[in-house]
Amino acid sequence: MKPLDYFYDSPASGEGHFPQKFRICFLALVRLVFTPLFRYKAYGLEVLDALPKGTGFIVVGNHRSYLDPVFVMSVLKPRVIRFLAKEEFTSALPALARIVAWVGAFPVKRNTADMSAIKRAVRMLKRGEPVGIFPEGTRIRSEGQVPVYHEGAALVAQLAKAPVIPVRLWNTERICPPGKRLFRCPKVTLRFGEPLSLDEERFAALPKNERHAAFTQAVMERVYGMEFPPERVD
Image (cartoon, rainbow, N blue to C red; front, top):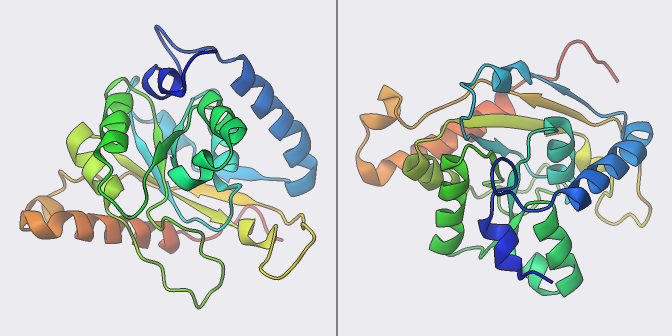
């Protein structure tokens, strides 16, 4: 059995990619189960289609559920997105760590400058692979919870010279609300927004020690500033 680093460091698509049978079966199962349960739909995917072919990009979104990456992976298919997964999530259960690696995710140490994970993300982006990052780090479980935005996405965007695509997810927090034992099946909606770049004049003009924080704040403001798609009303 190949070591986990093989999956973390090999391409997930293109020349020399690692085997995709598990990921393909996993996403097929997700669509089979999630489609009737959550009736999920994505808007704004034309933003991704407008990017030059072979461009690596970073998807940055709000984080309300452990299932958020799964919804994003599913709607981006056939693109293979590589998500950062918190190391505690993968180290606790070796079997889970392997499943996470098979679908293309890789670990990151939270609350530290994990340069190993950052360098991996940069290599992926330079190969043309999309990378998913949740700057909130942990799930936002209530409206009163004050999010703390981590600046890793800004650093990765700078090093890889990659655009950042904001995405907002609605209703995933209702799938397993705090204090409830039973799962619920709300309609889930995703919306992708226009890209942002650290090369934009408003960020490039800032002092270097302020640039990442300002960029992260701008990205998350765009995430939360996106309105619910008018085509779909619950």
